[in-house]
Length: 110
Image (cartoon, rainbow, N blue to C red; front, side, top):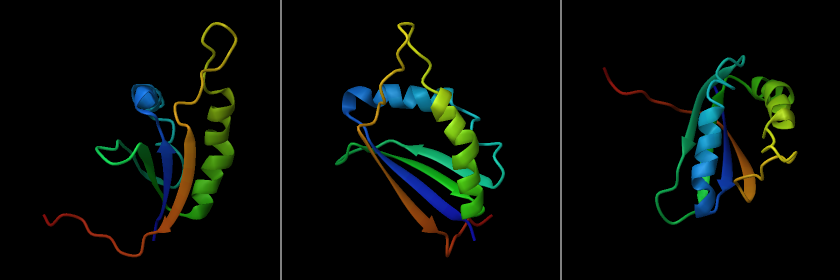
């Protein structure tokens, strides 16, 4: 079965639009990766300032290969400078990654 990685990002209210814009501009960055199955950016509605970045992978090895390859490269060159030679500050003030193994799943009945 697949594995799920959830990155819980603490995002102050004034940075929410920035975070969402940055994710929108990265569209397609992970979708072509071997073993990638699904992505969702979840916006909090109430009671928390944490966004959840949900990805599902065929295996832990596929996720690690993406982390050490395309993701690492994107973050090293990512955050193009703002014209003054400085990279933009992160929109999130904290991050925590959770890992899960899918043990049951269901799809809608057709």
